[in-house]
Length: 413
Image 1 (cartoon, rainbow, N blue to C red):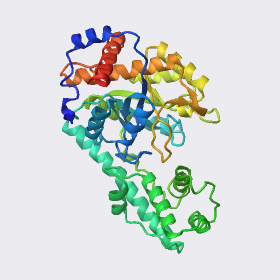
Image 2: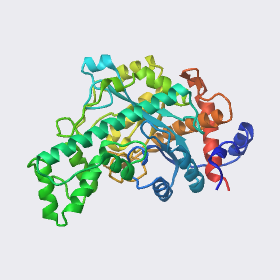
Image 3: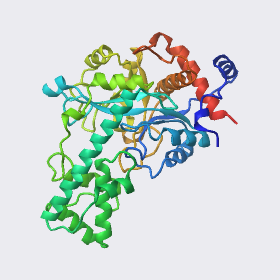
Image 4: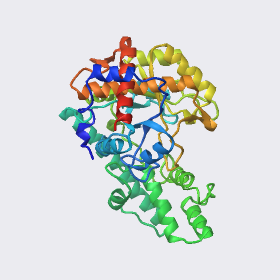
């Protein structure tokens, strides 16, 4: 298998690749999923290869890794991309804290925690490169995240012992067996489900034990629906108000400006993940007014947004995306897959409504710009960022180059 470091090195030069691509006719718009999580943070996938196998079955040509706080999965992701001929986008995700919005009670793109702000980085350097300072910052964030999760296990054990429930968890062993570098609260919920099922063999026994753990609350999920059950365990035990909840230390959060600087230092493009509407039609305070959201993002130099259409109404998504696209924003879509539920890889809106052709074109444009950015950076040239701002006036040029990069990769013999 080709070395991952040859991913872009052996590509034709820019002009040759564009010339070859222009000679193609009737090229279809590929299916693209620009945001998935892998086992390097938490995901629905059993291993790194599973999303590629599923992607090929669903004719997805571009796949973007988007793990929290880590680039650890990049090398394996690149090798699997070469093996399966699925073009890789190298992304990352962080949680920042905007203190002024927290104090004002304004929810950004976390519906439950005012001020907390998710921010993705798109098209990071591959092979991975960053300053020593950035490496140290990411390591500190990872360590703090794991420290909080280990403390949750400690509180969970104390709660179980007090309730006379004969279960005990070793955080280090769980970390080693269920996770990779990052050990998250979803891993704890998974461990509780596994332990309950191992201890009780009958359906009734498992329900009774879970209800005891839930302090008498009835189990709402079907016990054969692993994803729902683990989410219910997480909600009862590990979220705010639960007996094993551990509040995050505000000092462990970076500011939005610090996260933006970190993303740019790693070669990435800052991108704001939009929640948009929930199933009840509600929006967060920050996103309710698209004019205000546009102003807030552009004032911070952010001209990339991404959405997870599966959680949005198709009509609302279309109107929102069209509006921001007309404003010059670069937009991509994904599925996340950061819960135990193994949903389809093919992107659709809430209720399974497929993306229309216009949305697919916008998604392809966004993925192509990221692909061109990755290609140019790997070749030692300047990518889509000029300093800290994107070259919006060169969108068409980058889109054409990126489409050629993607097609060259997936059609290479």
